[in-house]
Length: 402
Image 1: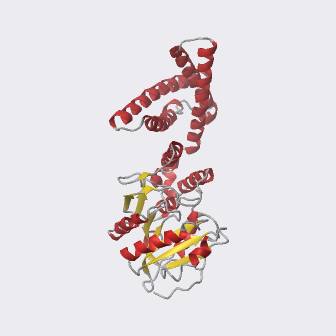
Image 2: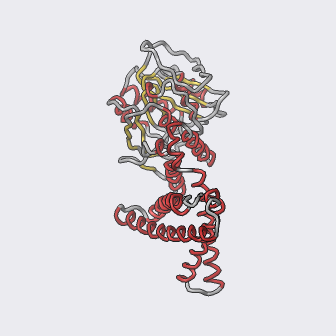
Image 3: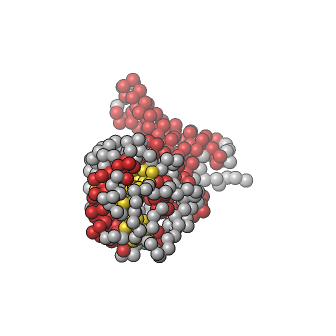
């Protein structure tokens, strides 16, 4: 291995494509740490990672800090450690931003036959690296640290953040199941992959979720998962905002447009599904508003008000779905009789959905011991998917076209 200097690593330019490496002057593992304003964590992180890597692959690795020109001078602090840690390399990016591209630029400049990534905020426990490394040495193409397998979990997340994370995963399964469905924690940013599985692929990530790009575009056959507990930050502020969730969805849509997902696109029209979901959301407010008027304004019994308000909400949802969500199909089935037939089908399917939701909540909460609120939310998501699919294939099926 050549002697390292205090010079910063040159930033690769051009397309995001990871080159293959020659057998001469390679190392076994290149671990990339993307950073931004991590001055309070970088020294401890380098100390922990090098101590661990010195043990599992001594003198056969490189630790690459890729910093996006942090205002707190994270890159400068990292560079000051180069004399003390000969396997450390530091890259300072001034023309690009973003975690995913930072990881890829680090891999482009690396020499490792195995590539890895870990967050720079100490929320990923470094000791899990040994298990990930062991899975690749044993033959896996990709080893993912997961919060959702045995040994995994979340330390102190709020109920809202847990719901948001799970909701994003469920939506991801609907948009791109052939990508998201391959692992239990597709939003993980902690994994290792064989270089040969991702070389010469033109990558086009968006946002923070680099694993989605690897799953969607890499040549990945054998996948292993290792449980880990996501830790709270020890220093600095979280960089997770609503923008990251939007970029996550945009990334999924981009992957879904690939040829490998065209068949699913034809079978499950995501645009129509989003309209169906928006209509269903509006029905909640109609239901609550009518219930309040009937019970408080007219003094009807709660049961009676519930039944009537639910039916009004069903009527609201049908009208919007018939005019908007499935408008292109409704226009092919003109006439009042056809509309009444569609409404009756929709009404019956909504009733079946309510029964199905209650059944799922009962099974998950009593048999699988899922908390009631979690069971309810998961049941709503599943029944919504079922309602859309069955209405697509039954209520608004085009059968009367001449």
